[in-house]
Length: 77
Image (cartoon, rainbow, N blue to C red; front, side):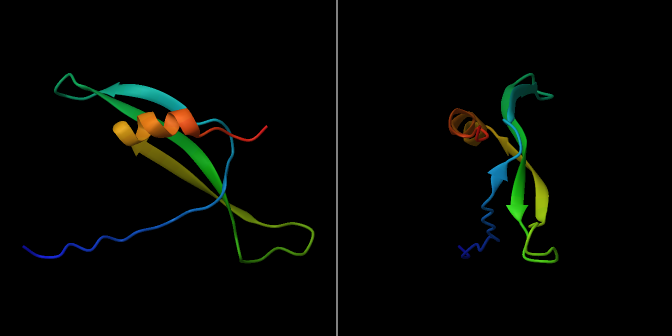
């Protein structure tokens, strides 16, 4: 069996607002958990000392990962 290498990305940032948790129905009438939100990640490009530009990255999680993250992910208030 071959060794499988996967690309891996780690994003560190802040949630723009609380993620939305929902269950979607698949074609086989099963329900799958879905969590979606927007992550603001500090950018190293452009801007000046007073303002720091950010990239807003949409995130989506599915299944058990979405269920677990929905219990732990919320925006700071």
